[in-house]
Amino acid sequence: MSTPACPECGREQLEDHPAGLLFQHSQACTLLAAEDARRVADVDQASRVGWPFTRPATAVERQLLTASGRSLPADDAEAFVIVDYALANAVRRRTFPTAEPITPQETP
Ligand SMILES: [Zn+2]
Image (cartoon, rainbow, N blue to C red; front, side, top):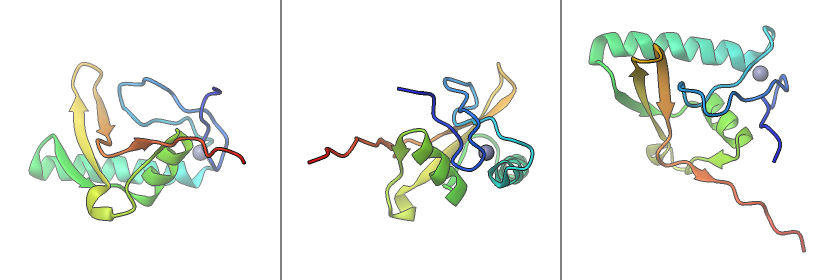
């Protein structure tokens, strides 16, 4: 299986990265801008509620998860992300406990 790539800019996913879900992006990629904004918002939220915390997954996270071969439940209440801080690596880490691997559709 080839390395998953960003659906917009085509740069590859950094698999097995301590940050969890992480893609390389071109500077012009709008998903990069959305991801950067979300990271800033997460750090801000952690300053109020502490690490880790849980929040609904964003549309961009859904998109990138799909690109990496996993999908979240359609119900937003079940599509959540645990946002933590990996001290050893000094990175925000996102995990998606309800994400399921996408099984390839069988062609008839
Ligand atoms: Zn991208």
